[in-house]
Image (tube, rainbow, N blue to C red; front, side, top):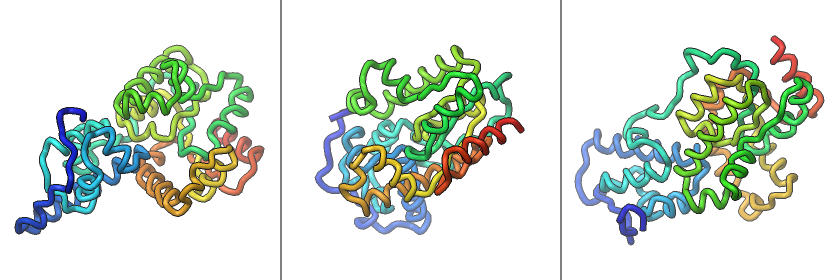
Length: 276
């Protein structure tokens, strides 16, 4: 078990065992909300977070419900698995990046498409790049090439923290080697504060948007039948992820709504927005 933390048979629940002040209760509720938000931004289920932190699912559930008044070491383990500073669990907006105050010279030469999987980033990016006369890059594919393994294997071997370190390094390499490009970023890049801030500084960003239903339909059409295994829960998870990242995606320079719209019209609108 990582970091020497034994699994918990039951959640440590001092909230029921002792009388809490209204202030303490409010703190635990806020802590639970922040844990849910951080987990959703990273698209992590409780089971995945439990496996990567060594903290039981029952304890995670209790914390998210506002009743898990437990050890600071367990909270530190959860923060480490989420690849955030412990402050992100203990104070509001600790990992919220601000819009960049300064942009790097020539940032408009790199067009970065952000948004959830199924929004249309790859489809639009592959068409936009030749129109602009620049290369098209997919950050996740570049990460796989760098690591010599698939994203699932990277997560399994190195966890969320290892993947995010690799993502940051590959992004820096692409920034240096490609002053002009169209880049499709992974949907979760906004959850890594420093990496997303770097993307905002060095690229003109486009949030490729779609409704949760449209995201689900497109992912299934791409041949991924996993969402159909438990459609109700999958849709709930998808809505939660989208809601948790919405304020971050909204920091993009351009927003492009793709729901129920055809590709030629979207490409023309995007090209026009980039020309402004």
